Length: 172
Image 1: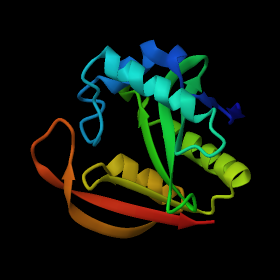
Image 2 (image 1 turned 90 degrees about the vertical axis):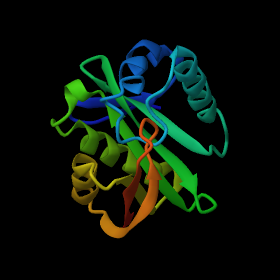
Image 3 (image 1 turned 135 degrees about the vertical axis):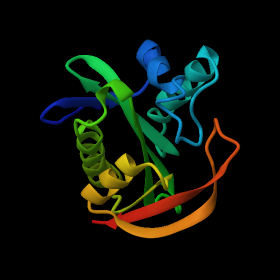
Image 4 (image 1 turned 60 degrees about the horizontal axis):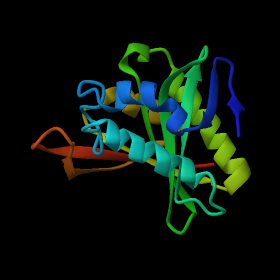
């Protein structure tokens, strides 16, 4: 599976992306608003990449991750988890902070959304973000997602603070 956009290539995330995945997955500043990141060590990154690759082999995957490639360089990932008995796709994304602000996340998510619609019949998408993650909120809105809810109880991995989370959705 390869998805090409005007500037990016999306391909299944796997162990071949280890070195560059470590760069953004273990960087505390890059992942400060993430629930499951940053990873604590190389083993955690390796384990995740192996599990992600195995999902692509399943007839009915639980989730799928794609590596985002720019000019031959792996700069991040987009994931979709199949929830609500596979009727809804829950998006997540992370891009190396050196590439923020260039529209790559929007471009990658939009292309992966279309792939999931065509190949898995998904027409309902949701995404969550820390309420202070204004960049991710802008991406959700630019994708056409609408605000659904804000609630407390979010705990980002590297903080003891209980924060608020926003949820957006899209039907296509």
